[in-house]
Length: 68
Image (cartoon, rainbow, N blue to C red; front, side):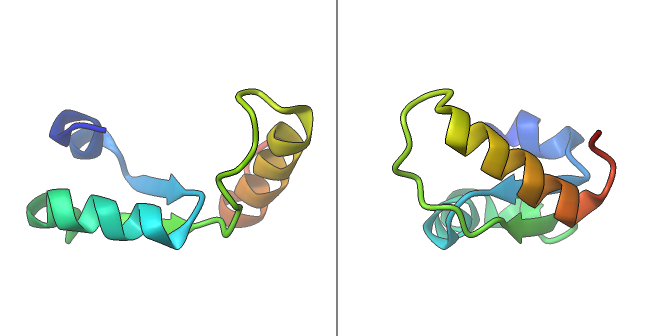
């Protein structure tokens, strides 16, 4: 994650609360105007794990309500 990524984002979604803490500790100066949401998904899945993908889809849809 870079300051540039944060700069264009309207909303930042993270899987775990520790991810929120890490972002705030590194980028606090630019996060004050951003909506940040923790999806409360443990970060212990393999890359592109089907179960993780489905869980992400469901949680993101609940959060922003625009996914198919």
